[in-house]
Amino acid sequence: MLGANLTSFAQQTLPVTPPATEQDTLPERKQVIVDRSDLMEGIVDDGQEITYLKGEVILRQGEVYMYCDSATIVDNDVIARGNVIIQQGDSLNIFSDSLYYQGNDRIADLFGDVRLDNNGQRLFTEHLNYNLKTKKAEYYTRSLLTNDTTYLESNRGVYLVQTDEAFFRDSVIVIDTAFVMRTDSVDFSTKTGILTFIAPTLITQEESRIYCENGFYDTNKGYAEFSQNAEYVKENQQATADVIVYDGKTKEVTLRGNARFVEEDKVATANTIRYEEDTQLTFLEGNAKYTDAEKEVVGDRIRYDSETETFDTEGRSTIVDGNQILIADTVNYVGDLGIATGNVIWTDTVDQITIESERIDYNKETEYVKASGGRPLLISVVDEDTLFMRSDTLISLLENEADSARTLVGYKNVRIFKTNLQAVCDSLVYQTKDSLFSFYQNPIIWSDTSQFYADTVLMQMKDEEIDKIFLDNNAYIINSPDEIYFNQIKGKNMIAYFRDDELRKMRVIGNAESVYYIIDEEDAYSGVNKCVCSSMLINFGDNEINDIFFYTNPTSNLYPMRKADHNALKIPGFRWDGQRRPKSRYDLGNVVLINY
Image: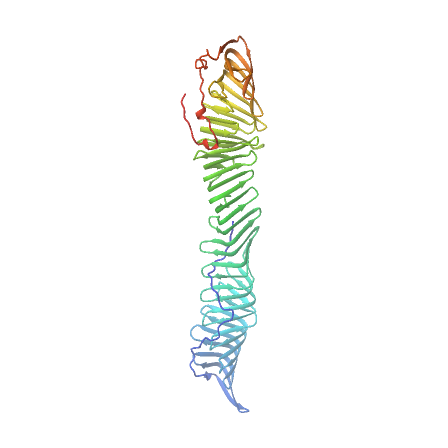
């Protein structure tokens, strides 16, 4: 994701104005002494002694030695020409074409092809002013300082030999094996190899550029810090932060403080962004956010793999991927499979479906979702009402990419609650394409005062309302407003028709049986009718039976209420399972297991 070839930096602030109080080790004796010369001539002109020297001239002042082809000494000042060399101590040598040396002040002005050598550092210039007392070199023409791996050029500067510090000003260029830097002001410690830039600075590499207005670079350790409007650009990548850090040893780039990284449609922001060049892993830490054309990821910490284009998150995280939203404490990806754990919430905004769980496994390629742990909860908006469903496991999978049709599967101890509908079963399948619920293994559905059950129950939705309920094999409906007397309908198969979420009509197909209680005009029970036939049609109103039509050889018996044996009138297979009926959404976690 991020990349740079710089070596590094370590924070150090060098003085802009070099100190001028350094003390030389020269003895108090200040007279320039002639040690050798092929030819010497001395004259007195207007009371002033002048000495002319020629041929392999050697001069000395304390521990300082000067060599040249010819020299003129006026009082204690020296004018030297040809192959001039100044030696001070064991490490400093200065070469030039000519020299003007003020012996009393111990200040040398060197001209021509000037070169200063000190402990492997070499300074090249055309005019150098050097104070042998303070060991301070100054130049005001285009100059170059190098140690063979790093080259520094500037129009003016100061080099402190004793402290190994250099101060470069005006049109500074630094050329290293890994980069080229342009700025107006740079301080350089030749001893530690640390460059400190204190002005707008542009660093270029083969494919990248870094801009900053403050920072430092350790040429020995390959460590760099860029601050104050720091910006990194590489091809179509751009990064900004309060501080940009590059560690050449670990090959890590770190953006610290208000970190932001942009690459085409990818945008990453965080308190800190760290990129590992070798692994191509990017870590976003603190208020982390990553977005691209397809998704948005928000979390406390995000790990992004640019090679596989996958990511992990830590801390409460939110992932928006198209019409899907995933919220969890932790999200990890292995290939295309993502695993979300800890208070997970997954939402499909198109189908208005939400799943809450302790764990969700998600396949990005197939859009497969599996929720498990803690009795996952499905929440779906139906007819401006909310349907809640819990089971041991919930699965959502994409059936058709063209129309985003989904299939939802719940299995083991499925329980559903909606204001006007409740259900339990062992497993369930819901298809969004045709809005069909399929209930399996001891399914029971309750609607108002009616209870439906069969070997298999199908519930067809239309316009987000219940349209039909199909009961296949051993179909049974019980209706009881008071749970004292029970209207019963049994058959091989049944179809229940709804309108406005209320049962309006029931068709019984095969082996039809019914027991229904007759209510008189005063809403009192007047009798009970039992009928057996091949098929029936029952009409309902206000959740009560209005009338029944019997087909094919019906037999019917009417019993007065006082003479009826109500227990005996219960059709085989009768069971009223009110204790299993969810009373609210908060009752869905309670599983009542009953064996029949």
